[in-house]
Image (tube, rainbow, N blue to C red; front, side, top):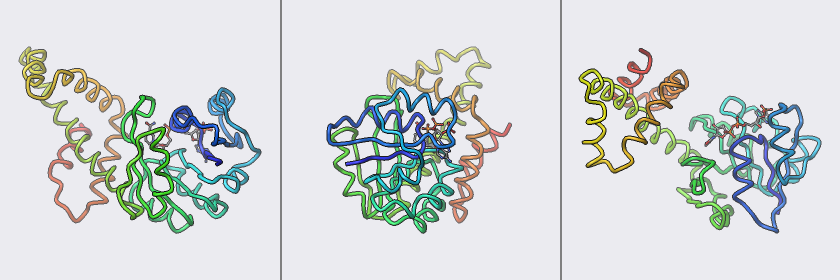
Length: 244
Ligand SMILES: NC(=O)c1ccc[n+]([C@@H]2O[C@H](COP(=O)([O-])OP(=O)(O)OC[C@H]3O[C@@H](n4cnc5c(N)ncnc54)[C@H](OP(=O)(O)O)[C@@H]3O)[C@@H](O)[C@H]2O)c1
C-alpha cells in the first residue's frame, strides 16, 4: 500500500513515525517547498516524487496536511487525480470540508485530537470511506464517527467552542486571583476537584492562548459564524475577552 502526503510538516512527519509497517510505502514531493520542509523530507524514510500530481495518482491513501488556508485549493488541484482515499487532516471549517467534497471522489474528513507529537494522539474520521482506514488503529488510535463527511469538522468546532471559551474564563479567573495575591492558592483548591495536573494544564492553556490570541480570536469568530443561528453568549464573551 502507498500512502502519499501533500504537506510534510509536523502532522505528516509524526504520522509517518507512528505508522510502521513493511507493507506501507510513503511518498511525497518537494515541489515548491521551503527549506524546512525539504529538510523534514530528507530526514524521513520516504520516497520523493517530482510532483504532487504524481503523488496523488500513485497513492492508495492521499493525506492532505498542509494548512487551513491552502487545503481547498490543494483539493481542487489534486483531488481529481486521487483515485484512492483522500484524507483531509487540515483544521478547516465544516463548510470548507463540504466544498472539498465537491472536488474529491473518496473524501474522508479527519482530525487529530491530542498533541500530534505525543505517543497517543487519536485520529477521528467521518465519511463513507472511513471504514477502509480503520486498519490504522494498529498504529494510532482511530475512531470512526459517522458516514457523514463534515461531522468530524463540526466536532472540532464543538471542541474549540468549549476549550477556547474556557481559556478566556481561566485567564480572567487567574488574573483576579493574582490581584488578591492568591494565585497559587487558587490553583491549589481547584486541583482538589479538577485533578492534580490542573495547574500545569491551565498555565499551559493560558500561555498558549495569550501567545496566539489573534489566531484564537479568529477561530472563535469562525465558530460564531458557523453556528450563526445559535445564541452563543459564552463564546461571544470569550471573543470580547481575547480581543482586549
Ligand atoms: N500540528 C498539529 O498538532 C495539528 C493537529 C491537527 C491538525 N493540524 C492541521 O494539519 C495541517 C498541517 O499541520 P502541521 O502542524 O503539520 O503544519 P506545518 O508543520 O506548518 O506543515 C505544513 C506543511 O504543509 C506544506 N504546505 C503548505 N502549503 C502547501 C502547498 N500548497 N502544497 C504542498 N505543501 C504545502 C508546508 O510546506 P512549506 O514549508 O513549503 O510551506 C509544510 O510542509 C494544518 O492544516 C493544521 O491545521 C495540525
